[in-house]
Image 1 (cartoon, each protein chain N blue to C red):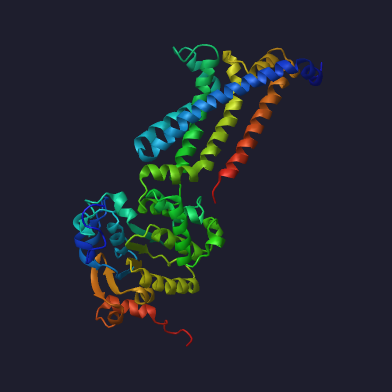
Image 2 (tube, each protein chain N blue to C red):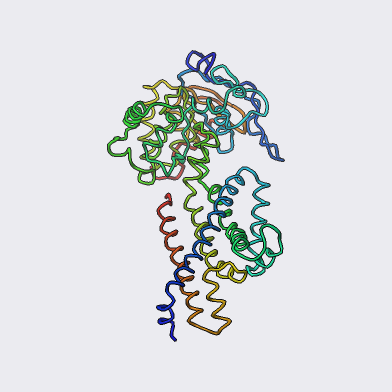
Length: 260
Length: 210
């Protein structure tokens, strides 16, 4: 990396008047004229219904998508100027279905980016050990397993470990706990919150679960139809006077008619 | 003379003809794999190439084998009577299953896995060799298996254009109404096909990633 490094920026990620349209005949607007600054070390949660544009916003950060207009800056540099390979290797990415490589062991999955970055074998081995412990997996027990020999929760732990392996300063996560059973999800949320605090990474986290957003976020961004309609820290979020906030709050409550 | 005594008296000739047949199949399969697999790989990112190559391979597959041999004979350089023409025809026959399975294998990988690979900063070449190829090996091999079994069978017909192999026993057996001669070609050909199917099937299972 030349010039500014990711670490010495106050604002690490910035969306500047970003619009994203589908590149098909519909050219439907998915993200509409959006401005957003994400500071170093914060956990920003993008909250919204399906189709609100939150995943698209996430994918614009690591240049999986290009803005139709406007610019996304990462570390002070527009994603159009970044070499996409370098950019993606400096951003950890976790998705809902883990996307683990089924033909790789846990160790091979976790060590992929360090290997691509030409780390030495000793350094990689030490890092795999360290990172598996960090996500609560005993290396002696799990290092040689393949993804199909893991539970859903364990797979997501490996997914997080893989994203963190090369020590990126940014972590982007797309409903990482969305497919887990409620008990496992709560455990992972709890542990992940601790981990996020300890590591001080900048995290952008997509969810449609208000409870998860309130629990993990330092700031919540509420999206509706491709637009940001509210930004607030979790302690203020529920007090916002906006119909979509109320809709999410209502959905959180016990449905009327359920036994008390 | 029953088949058993025929076999005992002619076993050397049967064996050498079986080896001829096997060599014919192996040469044709080697060429077909060397063409079909890379073509399938290139087709992944080039829709036009995919459409054209699959259509052409499909046409060859559809032409009856004896007719294909017939078509090739008058063509200069690749045609004429003998092994070379037979190999060309066998390659054209084997191409479709190999090409199609390579393409299908490489393109039917879990989108989440490909998404993760791309988002982790793998180049498309790295994704091809470290993700797509290992995950589609069993599907590619299934295509090679199908093609091999087809080729063992079609290669018997190649005897009609002077390519030798087990078909020469079969054709002579038919012409002379000699069942022993016919079986001396048919039984080893059937065994070769079954054996190829079995061995490649075992390999395919080993390479499968669940």
